[in-house]
Image (cartoon, rainbow, N blue to C red; front, side, top):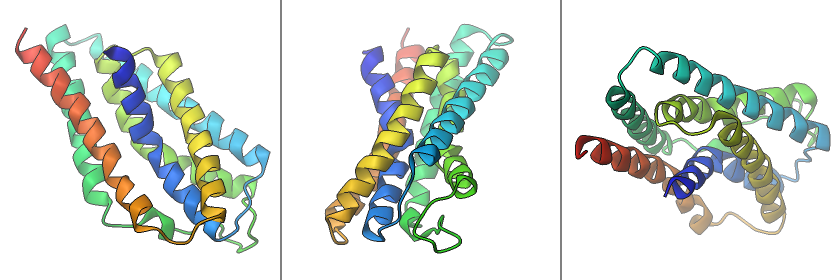
Length: 188
């Protein structure tokens, strides 16, 4: 069950990169390999740091409290993501110089944007005893792969309402994991 939860967390916090990738693909914006490397390293570092901070906080709390806090963090993050789905990430411009090419500076800011959700999820996941190095690596890898996949798909598609409706899946995944852990902790 823990592996499925890890997969859900990874998909939930990486899904924005897929939606942005579709937008980039439709606008024919190129993301070079070095930009993917910057995004990967930034994602990995942010999630790992968040989990280590969460571990540090967890040292001062009883185990039951860490489970409850971690659950509430994931539920809250899911609710925030659900609320923020009203703004479209595809409308945000990361190609500031309009060159149709993401520079390293633009990749850094794109990476920061893509890791905002991951920081909160990493912090919450640490309270639920998920492995930091593995989770950070998987989120970073999924972020890059989903960005690439979105760009590839976006090059061959027009604006598609079905794809846009998928953006509601990640918040529900995070809330489901949080609720599962909360109920499992309270019913022990």
